[in-house]
Image (cartoon, rainbow, N blue to C red; front, side, top):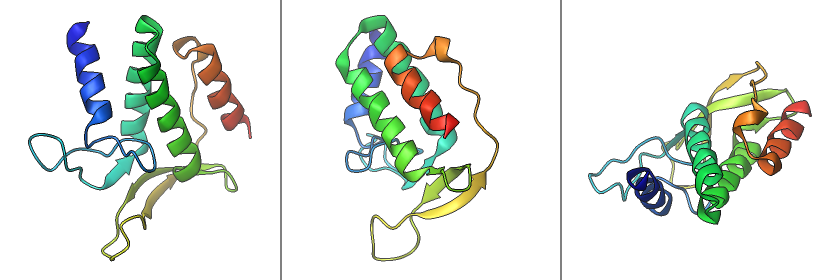
Length: 133
């Protein structure tokens, strides 16, 4: 368990986690993980969310809950197209001078499956309410 918690802390404090917008970048371009590849994917963030929620369930460490909330906020803000009932599968930087100008790569209009038993009650309500909108 210690290997997992140390890894999640380091990844959550490192360059893969976007401190400005929340969510995780897909991978790093350098060995020490300090510089991310500027692409964020729904699938990757869903996996990180599951890991941080599970770590929070096991340890009750607020750091993990904070990262999970950051991922949910990022997904709700940037990877959700509520008007059309879609989720954006990935966002990447275009070739412009604007470092926060993301482009939408693809959309998926199939509702996600949420299994509340895997998510703490508070965050489960957030996700379930978002899906029902």
